[in-house]
Length: 253
Image (cartoon, rainbow, N blue to C red; front, side):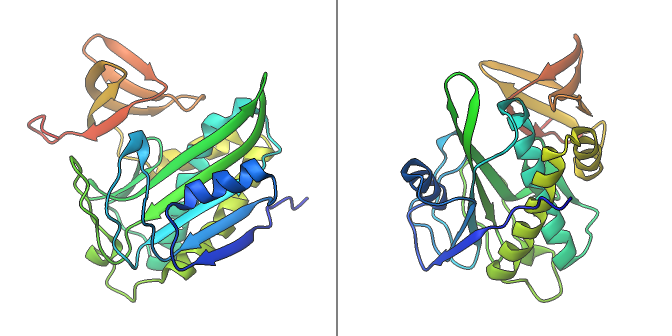
């Protein structure tokens, strides 16, 4: 049975934030399964409240989705979102050996961030997942300056014609619909296995800030719940959240 999502698409010359627009529509309950693209965000938001000046020509895309799956599956949403983005880039631009997903959902090229995903949701008491907003930012033509981050763009390594934000948006919609269908059908094991094939190489040295603690160790993938597995000097850590940095051979970020 084909239960893929049909998206209502809106495209604006400018918006303060595509995520904020989707959240507003969710609260109004006026639109269902919405995909919003803008040519320019004037007040973009990133993870942990980061802000930046966004260059034109890049992708700013958000989805409002009213899920049919339970709140217990919400932890897999960052993984399916990053898979949709990875699929879109490789299908349009080709495969690149240095392109990876960094847990749970950033895209890196040669350890430089080219894309990020911001997930926001609303749960009705006690445990009804009412709506999800999935925001995707991809550096296509240029990279913004983000404090404390090495940032790159598709232009740095794609030597064929760069895809437009409209084309990338269309491909992401197609792939996100597919991965939502997989989650609906209970294919978390398949999602995990596919994500691991696209993630950082196993045994990469990492530093992970989780809460007030900083862990240093070796990347060992993710478990069946999507938790990061980090082999440290004191044992194998299972981390449900955190900010991850790749380390070089000298232990530097």
